Length: 181
Length: 130
Image (cartoon, rainbow over all chains, first blue to last red; front, side, top):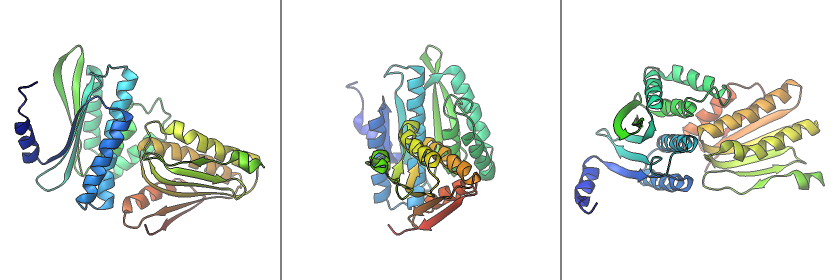
């Protein structure tokens, strides 16, 4: 821990245009507070209200998805930690990344679902979203993340990207998702 | 006296809208952002109020909304409310939604329009300055 090169970390954040980064257990109030910081930032950046709402909406859906998953799986605080990054790409677009530990089979299911969504155009995504809204709570649950993921896919200007990383935890993998506004 | 007992007066928070109702006027208002973690819990009181109002009387119902950002679980809960209104409308009850939005934020208008597509009762989407 004392060996962490804080300046190196900071330089990397600057270089990669990372505005906001969080790593650790998340609570309801923490999601709201970080969300406030994000909103203030977007406002200061004079982002159009509609686009700012898309960035904020993606952030909320992804973090609340993680919270619901962690609660449902009964993960410990440590295992329920989330990693959230908001940055900008070379074109000045906002990139939202969120990741957390999931069971191996859930990681595969989620990745397959993200790939399905990534292949859909906007009208198909809208139809999928409306169909999911009409599904009863239980059936609509794709590890609980179904509707939220579709909503994020609709807001993202680029197809969603998902990645599953191997970790040395019993049967678990790290699932990360990337959306762009 | 019934209106005193039945009316809602929910203070807004960062993630939940202000909610007020007036049984005597048949009007329920919601204003602000809605992204609570547990939307079903938050919306259940509102749903019950509307359900009772529609069950117990025959007067018109007006929902006045100035909702801004809604997370997907709030959208789902709102759809349950609109479904209830659609049913009442099908039985000949007069029900109406008026959704006010800030014209600088077109996303709110698009969201309201997307809701409106699925219903046949009177649903106005109206710009209102800041």
